[in-house]
Image (cartoon, rainbow, N blue to C red):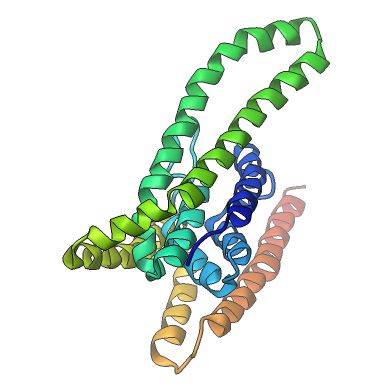
Length: 258
């Protein structure tokens, strides 16, 4: 399906806002599941946005910025997965593989900003030494605006201006290559979740993992909502009751010491 000019502009405007959120890490609306859902809503296919967002979110679950390092950009991954699947009538699994170059492109753009914005540091130090809060605020607004506009321009060019090129690329790719990308796209969510588990999976959480694995593997469940509800319940129990018991135990030790 074709993306209209209005839809392209709306995607650009949405990504300007989302890009600022990613730059500041304020409300975390930059996560792929939210970005893809918003993209699907703008393109008139919310179901596609939700499916693509779920897959992309799993693929990027273990990829988070650390210090000056940047993983592939989650915003472009979420947007372009939906855009490619929508315009070329392909599966979200295949679209994830084709969206990765756009995600990596934005990754390097952000790294370029990290390096180039260092030239503003001397001026920022000067404003701070002179307690010029107004000038320092304007400098922060300027750099943030540069990043925001870059998101809008890149998303507009990638989603609207390049859509015919994307269709032509899909048409000339051999079947075996497309099938390979689809398999890779299907594996990426598992790899992303495995990276997350590599950090989060501790001995005390293994029972929760076993319960979820049993529910989804051996019970006739039509979707993941029941598993998510069970996970929510287990998480609330762990947070409210186990944490409360630990705090009481610590309090008892302190009282005994007194």
